Length: 346
Figure 1 (cartoon, rainbow, N blue to C red):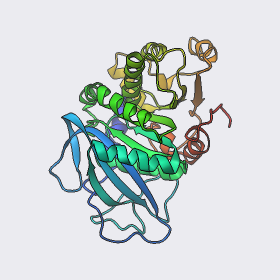
Figure 2: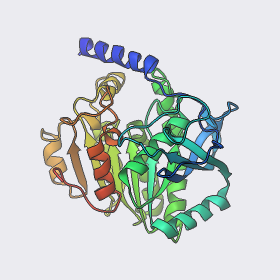
Figure 3: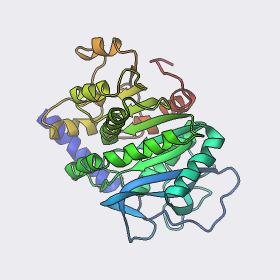
Figure 4: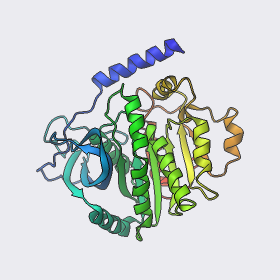
């Protein structure tokens, strides 16, 4: 175990040093997007503190309250499914790279108006909660990629919490996720109460799955059950202790949303998390065919587990298959986000 973990940590350090995304590319470009680009109009709700750095907007520190921003991102015509064509310089080239078209602060009234406007177009809302080691600008472009590739008929709402985007700030990030539970609960409540939003799918990744389950748990306890509009929850590579998840799920009440869990036994990031958690198994790395998981999962008609272990994607840590695998991201759009329930093999 120690030797294997050392190898994983070494690989993670190389990735952190050599594979990091550029910073400061959220300054709106003056160049008009060429024909064939896809424009993603997303609402962003965050508990991050504002950043003074141009093009970064929000950093990794915590704010006392949540704030909103409407951001429009263009996806280039030559976009490859599962990838983000990161800007190589500032300003980016919309013909070949992801680019920011507009950034507008959004107060409560503007956010509610966005729900009404976008709900009139789509009726379904797609909420995304990112994971550990994620900067603000990276969360925006990754979500834009997920929306574009899934081709889901859903309005995109990003909830981004104060991750510092650094490999060795795991504990800070985890505390930040817990810090953000109330704000995510409030965002979900506002969305569910918006008259023109009819259905909601929540997709969460990695450490963001813990935050999501905690916010859903709080909302269910506060209301005596979750709003019926929240009918689908996707947990990708969940960084949660399976026993903790069982208690979180139980608190959702007698009519919980359908939960789909993407697991992968070769997820190296979750191996590191397991080490940091005192060698406690992470939900995203279980073998669903083995006990004690198999019988419990088979008996629960509200949970589907999709094993992605055999699937290969562009992530060397095997932690981002949900967004970087063309097969998975297309499946998300065709099935889950559009309100259907997945079973393995579809």
